[in-house]
Image (cartoon, rainbow, N blue to C red; front, side, top):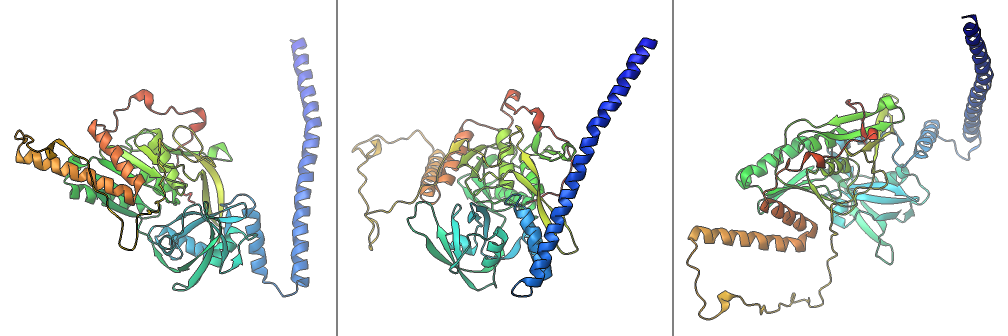
Length: 474
């Protein structure tokens, strides 16, 4: 016993000595680190005082400090920033669905302002601004070297005033100018249209109104078609949707899922991880779904796309998404200002982060550029005779007397739907493709839930997180 006690005691003493020897340098390192921080803060104070006393004009102290804070935050990533009183108020207004401006969502890439997407039915969209465009100048003033917030400030102005932006676009040899009249942006968050028996749900953004509007518009369209049994399927059009509120993306995903994970977020600390799961209830009642995406689909749009794709609830058609896989939390720091800080990355149900990668569609369908028809002139396009012939065109062909008038009417209606989709290709090729996919799924009587359990995405260890409610938004 004594031997073991001594050995034990000796071990404790050795451990204590070892810990003391290690802890000493660690404490010293921490002290040195704190001292270094205080030195840097003292440096900031010295520079601040030098600017106040020696700058050619008396600066505004508040603006100086806010600019310093914003510089600190924007050095972290493109989405973190300081929200002054005006910016904070404007952000809150935007999430409620009405604000003044051009109607574009922008980011910064290599020092240039890049258009993530123009918002539907806004001055920018109507003027021809496209996703992927770079804005190099505003009213002749270069944006290079400015922060994103500074560039956005240059684009702001009174409603009704004109602004000229210089655009650099892939495929164009030279930059060109677009003049836009600023207006009050009233977002139509969800628009619906019926193509044959397919219901198209166009979601332009994720704000406070998105889920409720989507639900109401979907139910209204189902009634117009004649009931859910008449619906071949749904197209969820998320093209050029720059994102928005995380909770709305979760609600929209949940609207079409009966169970399973929707999204998880993981921050710096494990205990800050969160996970959201779907509750029973599918607004589409198991009907086939297609999600339309492109390079302007970002953030919240990618959450919805990832959830529906990973659970095989929808076929994803279009082009690769933007790839914004981070979540920003807006944190008030005074009574009227806040910071927007990147606090987590989000992961699709399969445990994948799409940060900087985007989501690849199941079927890649690019929106073709409309070719210039050399046969078009001032009198309009020339028509060519159709020399195609069928049995019905042959002289003396037998009549088909085996079908009833009702059957003949149904055939004519089906033919009219096919022709309408063919015409839709000229207007919107990607949407026409999505409608054709739904017709194919309806032809084989596809319904959600037919996929075997083995096909459900397996949760990896890194995909698991603690469920919780969060207030994060972008």
